[in-house]
Image (tube, rainbow, N blue to C red; front, side, top):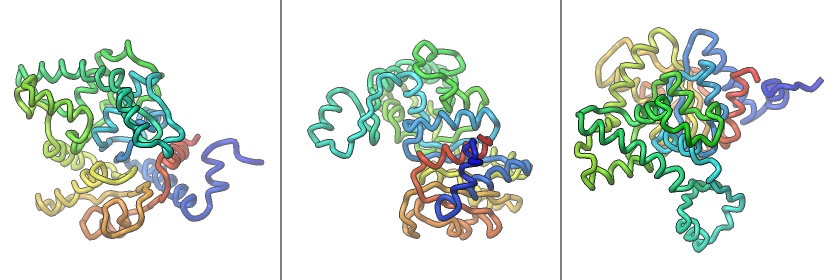
Length: 325
C-alpha cells in the first residue's frame, strides 16, 4: 500500500543522492530531539517572503525549534506578509521581465523578490508608522532594545491585528513572539527597516543611534544563551542558505573557546545546511561541513549533512518529516 503521509512518502521514494541526504538529515534532526537535544535554526535567503512561516510556525509551536538566527529581511518580511498579503503581486514569468518592466514595478512601489513583489505602502510603510513610535519612545527614555523585540511588542500588544491578512497560525514571527523564542539578527541594518531606522537617525527623529542594539550585543547575548543551553541539552544547527545568518551564530563556539579561553564549550551536536551554492572552499556557503572542524565549530563526531537543493522545496519537507506528517 502506498504511504498516505509525507514522511512515509519520503522514506519510500527519497533513497539516493540529494533525496537520501534530505531523509538522513531529517531523521538526524528527530534523533537529536528524541535524545533531549535542541535545535538552533539559521535562516538566510528570502524564506519569509517564500512563506516558510506556514511550516516553521508549527515547528516553533511544537517545540522543535528553540532559537533562530535570521537576516533582518527575514525578520520583517514575515510580518510584511502578515499585514499586507492581499497586496503582494506574484510574477510567474519574472525571468522574462525587461529593465523597462522593472521600472514599472518600481513606479508602482512594488519591490520584487524573485517572483514576488512586496508592496511598499501596505507592508513597509505600515510597519514603519508603528515601529517608529516605539523607537522614538525608547530614544526619549533612554531604553535600548534589540530589533526583534520591537516586533515582539507589536505582536503581543495586538497593534497589528487590525491589519492581519493571513491566519496568524502561518506567521513564524507570531509563533516566536508567543513562545518568547530567542532570536538573533546579525547585520540588521542591511534590511528595509534597518535602512528606515538609519534615515530617521539622519533626520534627527531618533537622537541616539544606539537605541536599537547592535550585532555585537547580539553575539554577547548568544554567548550567554549558548552556555546556558548546550551543556544541558545537545544543541544542533540547522542552516537554510548561507551568509551572515549562518556564519554569525555558528562562530559563537570558537569565540567562546578561542577568544574567551573557555575549556567547557560543547561543539554543535548536529549540523545540516540546505544550499544551492556550488561546492567550493572559497566561499562560506559552498564550504563542506568538514571545513568547520578546523575552526572549532564542529567536531569529527558531529553528524553532518548537506542537502544541495532549493530550500523552498526542501525545508518544508524536512519540517514535515520532523513533525511526523
